[in-house]
Length: 403
Image (cartoon, rainbow, N blue to C red; front, side, top):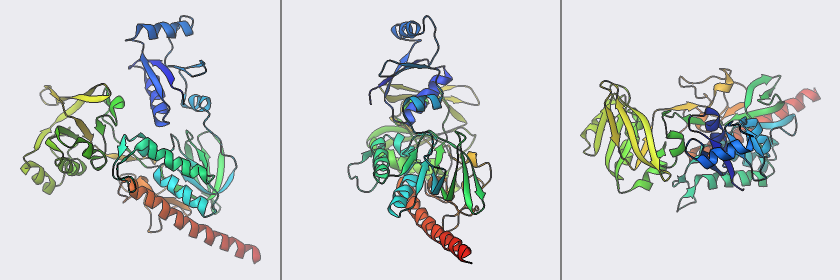
């Protein structure tokens, strides 16, 4: 795909939204900050007859969109926003590894399925710089490449795929599942799999968006090995995940710096004792990260602030790993399906949720391991349970008709 050109400024929220959308859909683009680039500002004003509306997105055919919504960008990029039909055997909500694995197996089983994803197909795998622990790729594989392989395989089997389309509601409807899309379209399915995954909590500081995958990471086992021999790695978060991942990272770097916003570490005492006794660890509590700085597409500096004294702290780690929590992507369900205390969907051993006919797989499911390989396995396992559910549903319907 030819590269788009996006003109905007760092302070512009609509610019950040457009960049996020394009990044999620793996659309290549060149960014011009009109506050820093006089020629870029001149081009914006020339194309707008003196106006300065941003973002201004210039497409390969030289057409432009000003302050485009995600829907406008999706339409211009040719993304499919409408389901082909109104009735399916199976609706898969979420087009990450779990959802796509389920879709591939559904197609092979002759189950008529549609995949619906509010962002881009491929999930978090698609925005991961490199994946080094997925079986079958001994030299590692780029996240975008692996995600594209999942999508291509699903397309090969003729699975209907919708991206940039959200799901507004999922509700039981007389033995079926009624699904309302964000576009307003309504579809019906005999069963549904929710595989919407989870989202790593971000720090929300300047510089973060541009450095994710380029020095800022959310998975030590995925990305830690790339920093073997590093002088220093920084971990944000003092809970169990932060300390566990920090101990894992200690095999790669000379120093592990833990930064915890709260006044004390919150991990288990056993983990705290291990970290405090480890010679490679340096711990900062009551300190928050306020900015991350990069150059040449790589992290160069992390700026912190002591919350008690206001003192500014600056570190130059080779990478920073963020472990401040995961949020399940379940907000659209509005409590209609039972969750655990953190909002992850509860399921039985058959992957079925508390709503009959609605299954869950991957990171969104309570008790899942939040690993790529496990997500693929859960998608397949959930699909096999759906197959049994559909068979039973068909038998009951046939019995009802015959009697």
